[in-house]
Image (cartoon, rainbow over all chains, first blue to last red; front, side):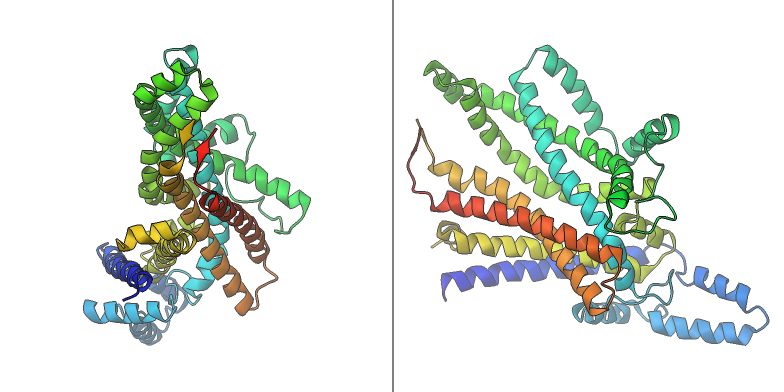
Length: 337
Length: 81
């Protein structure tokens, strides 16, 4: 078999296996929460149609059939799998009769606009400040930065979000309390709306960036200190290489564990930023997931996670393939050829 | 004078790959969102315009990164002064 085809099929195999495992977990977890997801919907219905109990019973039977809640678990699972593979995310229970896809795609742009810039900013700034602290070790710079890094790295996302909210929105009233824009304002691509949006964007962005930054800085500082003690640094120094040049190599060598860290921690960063959205009432997928969890909206929980995780797996797969196409040595390394 | 070869295949590769995965992930989600709004005739919505803006920004960032990777890979192996 062609080595590249072999490489492709191996990667695709891993992708499918991971996806099926994930589907299994995301199907079971929401169902482990006790309660009937239709109870809220039915109580609303009951208030409207108290005079007609037969109608309520008929609607209940229809809803049970539509959402398949009364069916055996394995039947529900196979129905869920067949729907997922055809791209149907189902109908929301809490926002019935709206489609899950319609709701998720309305909330998703707000999350993407917040999450990706904040994650990359925290990673870059955290690593740079960590390297600076290591280079200026035992000076006032390191002494000032280290406690800040330690505090930030141990502060949960939601806690920092609440502190920032309290200080800047409640006490000083510099930033708004929540939302993505002022209530009543119609979203549009105008300068006025952009400024209003940025005003609301600052606190959630700072919250995610600062929370994630501490961990990166600590990790980078430790690795850079270790690297600064290496023989090649003393050798380069004795050759008379400028500090900036030595630091560049130290920085690069210290980056390797940080890269693995970014890949491994992306899930927790994603989770943390979703919680931040809840604190700031930011209309992103985190807010949507939180609402869905509190109302046991199975299709919404599943649909949101399926979309977020399957695309992340696909992105990994595409980048692997792209790298193999760009650089034949990577392909050779993977195939063992 | 430092020999470049090992850094090219390990450290730089890892840094760029992780950042690229995040960007491609964003790009896929933005493309799906745009496609959804387009097929359901909801292009008038602000979310569509906002996603279009995000898509353009993510695409530019991804192209810059890919160009950087390609430039580094196709640079002849040699001695860094």
